[in-house]
Image (cartoon, rainbow, N blue to C red; front, side):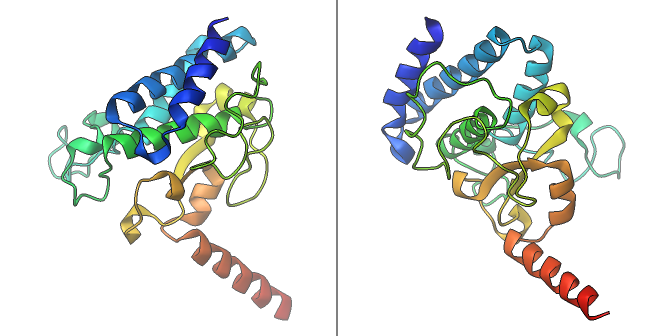
Length: 220
């Protein structure tokens, strides 16, 4: 079947890890996204809802957030996503905080897909071909139920994410405003509430702050 063939090819391409070429990472991205979409459709998920999620993953992975300082629609206003001028990250100046090479940005997006494959309610893949082959950038095996929100440490349900892609947002252990890089070791999907909690703090700073708040309340 097509999915089994795709999984075999994905496993073969993953062998190169971070040394994968631009050409091969494009092929890998296509295989991952097509496999994700087809596997979910085969298991009863709605195609339009899947598209909303995959668009979100693309905008968080290979594409940049709105990057111009001012709106192209309303002079003097900050730019927002509706301005529509996201761009591929590797086309930005390499000193820009949103910059990433094509290989790195694409691997980030692939990591997001693999995290979705690892959420609760994700339909199990037909074999274990890609279960461990992404260990160079994944913190867990690619298997349903293995991925948890990095802030709240609670499971994320793919059913809920598919129903409303706004349930999740992309995040960075060290925010890009704090000199963090858009690379697999610094990126993850998280619940919207977790993103609100983190703000512009590193995860370590957030945990320290929460611990201090708890200690303060216990003294009252």
